[in-house]
Length: 188
Image (cartoon, rainbow, N blue to C red):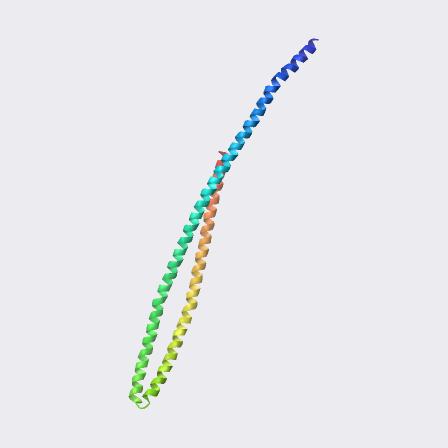
């Protein structure tokens, strides 16, 4: 009989303590889940804020770099044009002066030596000089155009390579900083 009473009391004692333990366990699980949800929400919000800030900084940096490259390209293009124009003008003036001097000399000699045939030879000389001048001018232009085009392409390729390299370095730095921030936030 004592055994039955003790067994009954044991069952009653276990039943009486099991219900609060289960309630505590359920409450702990619920609070744990709420805490995890809050932490996940906070982490996702902070992660999104960091991503937005990084995107804004990257976009600004990208626009600044692109504007800087465009300005440098325009400046270098203008400097190249400014350097080519005086050289072309000088070459043009030198060629023109040379042709004018030769023309004046030949004209004077022709006038002095051949007065009766002056008009005929003068016209032939003018035609010859005009053709030579046009040919030399065209050759000068043809020689300058490929050099300018090549210089323009080389400058553009160089600028594109430098832009790509700087962009990649910026992205690598941002990714590294984001990973560090992510690791710090994860373990915080």
